[in-house]
Amino acid sequence: MHEIDAEGGCRCGAIRYRASGKVFGQATCHCRDCQYASGGAPAYVFVMNKNAVQITKGVPAHFDSLADSGNRRRRYFCGTCGTPIFAEDSGFPDIVSVKAGSLDDPSLYKPAAEFWLSSAPPWHPIDSSLPGFDKGPK
Ligand SMILES: [Zn+2]
Image (cartoon, rainbow, N blue to C red; front, side, top):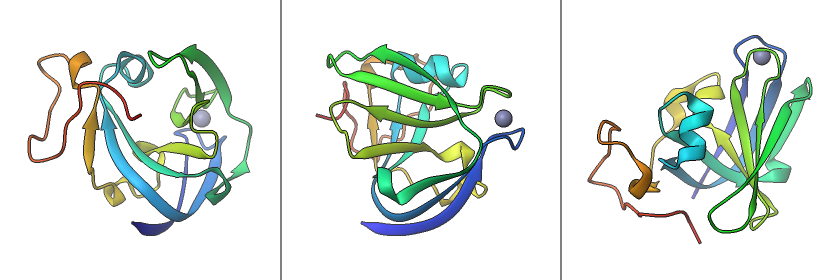
């Protein structure tokens, strides 16, 4: 486990945040919800404590959906430019997933696992050197 101290936000600048603290995991998610959110690609996320992430500008829009687990997934995005920024899961109430692409320096992302391979289309890039799971984290 390591720490990051990074800033990020959306494409248009309406939403800004600081993510400062421990990273519990970095993972790639191939589920259908993430594909919809990205326009096709998997999601690349930093998993952190909610209290390690502070929104410093703006109020993101959100959309709730029911996950396969039965948990409520809440996705936060910029209501103006649509950039996906965070995701939360009611089964992990202290945790937030920060979308790597919303960081000012997305090169900080180093994936450690891949989830929902069962939903990946044949053209998704999959790193076979990483632990891979057919479904989501439990
Ligand atoms: Zn925006």
